[in-house]
Length: 383
Image 1: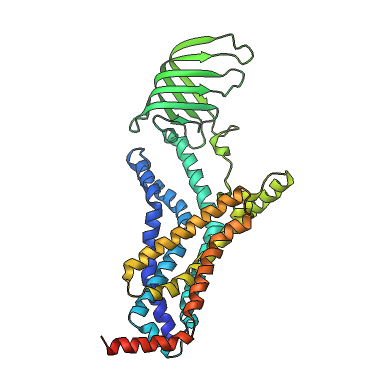
Image 2 (image 1 turned 90 degrees about the vertical axis):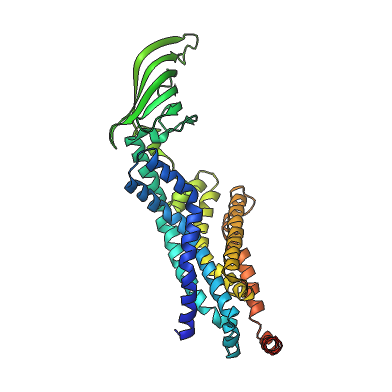
């Protein structure tokens, strides 16, 4: 590798690290507030919350690594062009295609990292995140509850709680729709109660106080029963059929082998496999994104050379936003059947990649070099 290549790589890496941190924090801001709430109001240990963060991190890095590479490319080539170093190199015989070789090397390395994250780390991390939340809900059962909202996270129960005291675990203003026994559905109202887990593998117990129980047999709806109680307990087995632990995994959580198996099963049963097929192709499209964004960033950075780092950051956000919107649009069109699943997954790569190739071909016209040099000489001769 030549000295110039190493020099350009250093320029890119100096902005890449900052961009990776900035973009990840921006995307993670919403989740960060919820994780901090677990520490402050729910009493979850900080180490457990850190583990949840690490489980989520790969899913964000898949998006932010290409964005950071784009920022590094824009900033590095913009700075080189602003200092006339690009002009000097091209006058020495370096074509634009040769100048972007260091960026392509960095983009390829980023694509390899994104491929690993997308194919292996994201499914493992997402599954680990949900598994840890499930274990937390068994030991700190009130994590599954939100004040003023109906919760269906407990098997066979629909639970509404007016107030949740996270410090003591006390619940107030409780309504329970209990369908654990389909032949004997019942509704329960209670002034207060507690929801507690008996260890990671044990039962969850809902204890109710000062309430009424209303039941009506499914076979004979005319028979109505009302019971008043001081204390009533409902035991929930988290490992029973229909419990939260049996949650069906979404396509985003599946590995490549699991997605291919799901595609075969869907096709065998006559169901649509578009969601699974889309995810297979998107895993590879996410990896290629870093290389595609390099093709856009290098020629564009040279053209906005005198706009500074702020312009590079703004352009990075705009291009990344366009890429993300195309990705969302492609997924929607693929799921609706209006576009083949592979085409929907590769839509942002084709559109943004086409733009990058057009910019690269335009900037690489060697015939423009002579006029560029004459323009620069005239500008310096007549300030």
